[in-house]
Image (cartoon, rainbow, N blue to C red; front, side, top):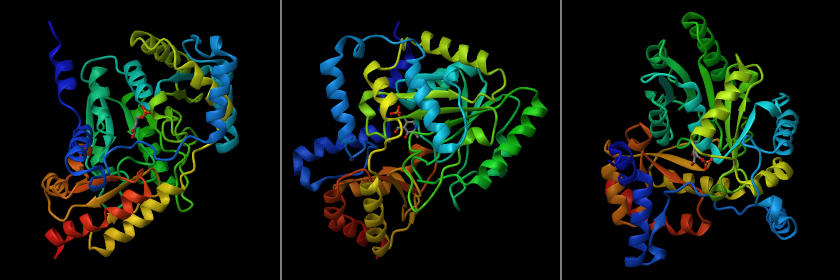
Length: 395
Ligand code: PLP
């Protein structure tokens, strides 16, 4: 018999994918130049040239090992390069024997959740607005996702609600900073407060509450913002990192899990991670891209176009009367919908060729998300459509 739950997951596309597919159909009808697609978080900056050259060279000169299996946890040289990079950058020494290479952050989260959820109904907390796949990943591991409503002042942590939601069933809290979709970078003050709260709760419940640092955008920061390195603040931290955005390699599927060496029972947890990866059939992360990471983990694609697009869009949209959350990182812009029903607003925008993702999909009402990883041309040419949108709702 077909698994009903899986059927439902596969047959109901996410709202983001739905809009993206709609955009392709619309482009065939009215012309690509009349569609302004702000839906997907696909980097618009190419991977640095030196990285592309290295990839070509690897394939041409060392094809057998480049395309071969690696150890399940990943090549030691790659894991050591990650340790060295993080030590240089953040002054914190991870342990290569607690790093597990994955197919991006999505696989990292799936594996970690599988390794820390033991019983049906155990809970994982996320802060709205949140990446919608968290619900899918947590439920697939047998858990339940609990969401704290957004703090709409600074889009960080709603502590009052967090205190109500955390319970003896809580196994983990997910932090995504810089955040998709709001662009918020959690402040050091917030991280310290959160760590103190979780330490108290761990002591009260007598079991660990892991902090999952979902960090695919860690390197994409603007205006001098800095992203606190969570293992420095909270011992039971597990990093789920990805090179999808930092190196513009989303289709290549490469990232890692790093268990903080200060984590309670870190070695046992690492074995559970290896077991979860095995049970999910990952075998090993792509070998070619493990080699790329070993050499280029301290290189980042140039994020300037994301900043330029952000600035241009904020200036255009605010001058038209819209209001936006000012993103300090990642490549999204969260814009307030002038009406409470963001879906209705997004549906009307569609008639103008503007594809904006309604915020309901991220667990918050009344906003739309614009991916700013688009071409400059898309931003500039979208102005007449945004002007019509403003005329409809703001005049
Ligand atoms: N987490 C967040 C917040 C994301 O935005 C994404 C992708 O957009 C992911 C995880 C998954 O990224 P990856 O391509 O590394 O699997």
